[in-house]
Length: 163
Image (cartoon, one colour):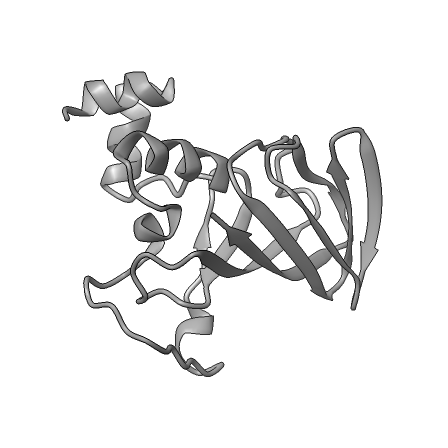
């Protein structure tokens, strides 16, 4: 498939697709979901760093967990399992700061689980707003429109996508 074919399937511009491909833009998860569907691969494949599959993955705070990428929506993501191909779930650590996150709602395939490590945020799923603080979690269908509405100064959370 050409870039134009993929862009049309995803309802993206060819320019955006080019920026994603060359790494100058880190897209939000909903964009990765559309892209993976168009390519016929799991979303985790687009987030993986290596071509080698493994049966187990171990990481420490001194390794993988320090590699954050800033998304175009204003939050930073870090894959907790960057080198396992074709996984069914994609665990991420997400950091969001007040004033940096762009207000938006996402819709994509699968299910999602969020656990707040530190800070707090207002999070919307469908038409309901939830106040989430340290130690609290939420599980929902990612087919429902969802997204961050407001964060404390900074919130850090685990976000697990199940495809």
